[in-house]
Length: 169
View 1 (spheres, helix red, strand yellow):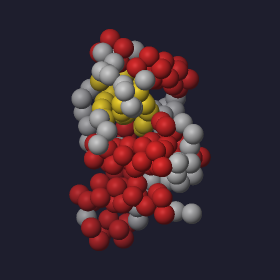
View 2 (cartoon, one colour; view 1 turned 180 degrees about the horizontal axis):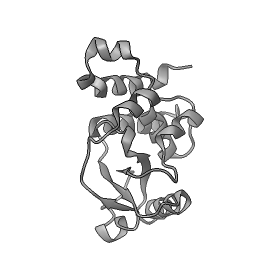
View 3 (tube, one colour; view 1 turned 120 degrees about the vertical axis):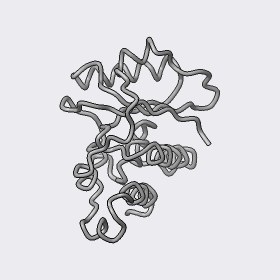
View 4 (tube, helix red, strand yellow; view 1 turned 60 degrees about the vertical axis):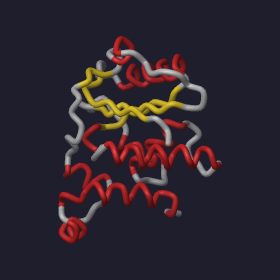
């Protein structure tokens, strides 16, 4: 199992281009994979843990669709096979809270310190603050599904979408 860190908070810049560049710089300095996601769509740490494991497995086995490991993580986290549709899970200039996903790759030692991270994210430590309506829309969860399993099982429905990414053709 890969070591993963998931941080929640406000991006330190409202300009997506600056945020993406700061994340790329962080990746290159530390030799890790990092991806920023819209925190409204991250239902749990389990959701992201599962998506990262699936994405890294796909990369390792040559089954990946995206060439960029961070984009492959976003693709799985979104439950989408198509990269263009997976971008709905990403950040934009309107994103108010992000989930910063970091995972170590072979031989990578240590994590970025708080000084480096505060250039990307103002951590609030609040996980599980997803937007049920937005999750329902982005993951195409029907009212019938929610009635069948209950809203408290939305996490399971999202994880099911992540699991099914490889079966979509």
